[in-house]
Image (cartoon, rainbow, N blue to C red):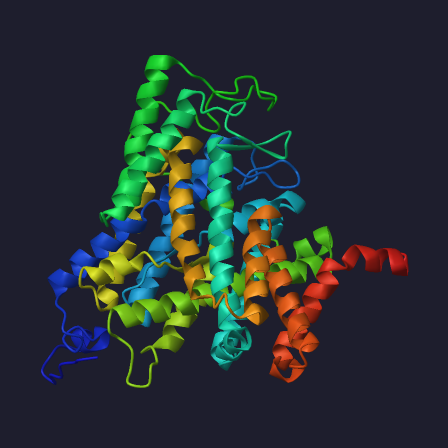
Amino acid sequence: MATTTNNNVPGWDRWFHLTERGSNLSTEIRGGVVTFITMAYIVVLNPLIVGTAKDVNGNFPGGGTDIGQSISLVAAATALIAGLMTIFMGVYGRFPIAIAAGLGLNGFLAFGLAPHMTWAQAFGLVVIEGIIVLLLVLTGFRKAVFHAVPDALKYSIGAGIGLFIALIGLVDSGIVRGGVPLITFAVYGELAGWPIFTFVFGLLLLIVLVARGTRGGILIGLVTTTILAIILENTMKIGPMKDNTGAVANPTGWGLNVPSVPDKIIGFVNPSPLFQMDLFGAFNAIGALAAGLAVFSLLLSDFFDTIGTVTGLAAEADLLTADGEVEHLGEILTVDSVAAIAGGLGGTSSNTAYIESASGIGDGARTGIASLVTGGLFLLAMFIAPLTKIVPYEAAAPALVIVGFLMMTQIRRVPWEDFEVAIPAFLTVILMPFTYSITNGIGAGMVSYVLIKVAKGKSKEVTPLLWVIAAAFVIYFAVHPLKELFGV
């Protein structure tokens, strides 16, 4: 990395390495704005994942049964936590990377944990995961765990989560539905209804924007498709898909919000009802083993995604040291760990580093000043939270599919000619979407990797830590037979 040294620069300049990294304030401000535009969709998208999922008691996040209120609460909290943590990254991590609720992690929380426990208990698991990761960072153990898992499995975890997110988007949009056979296409095998037309339009628009490299393409697609949805509803009077009992009364209706012009454009929603957390309640709700493995699954996804994201962004920004290390890596990982804790406390799911920060870096951002700008804009976004009520599934789902694609691109790094790692990677990728579980995919990959190594007489290549991980997943998969065996 080329640097410029000047002992006469102000202290704040030296702290942020502004001159040293060959940047300036205008460039950092512009880069921070670009990053926000690129990832601001999370303020709309996260509420449609977390805010629309019911817990074991049938409640939405915040403890109520009003889905509209839940979506607004999660939107406000998403912007608040993202803003505070991104500013923290800028000041302490001194790196141009933004923090927000992690896609994939929020899906696991909403679809894998909440149905089996209360939301307070699910958020408690997120806090525990964040505390563990923070301890691993402070003790220097996080790198050891990272190196214990083969690279191919790390890439397959990200790709599998991408495929899982894309499937959720297709299901939410109504393109993929359950039935006979197991999975059916759209409405009775046809692209019927204006809501599905809205999704197809949004997806095609995003494909064009992303392929052209349009900055803020996902946000542009979300806004444009939502406007189309509002126009269609106002002119065609389509109505909701389900009636008040939750039964499907109108197969060609809107899957979530019925889009309409909001009563007010600007408004503040107090997210404090989400600030409730039961730290150890999940261990009673689903058992210590299942809760522990859920924490492990959150930890593993958060763990590897952050390391890969930070390393990739540092390389793109030419901020790697001569020996390939990321400057201030300890501080960056500390912020990321605290962000996971904050996400649990704030009721938004685990917050983590965003690969969309590459857009700001591509526009010249090189320091934490860009993160200060991005974080400040997220805080301002709290005042548009009421707008999230008008976004239907069909307008948000295209973004899930495209983000799934972006994550799926990691699959190219798996050496498919090497069956020792390719088969575990394949199981990891396919079982996440096909079983609707990130945990199952990770577990299958870890167990099969160790099994193949043992079968080929290469057990010495399996690290002690990986033995422990594989053993934990064996117990996880065999929990019901073990209960029957021991009469539990």
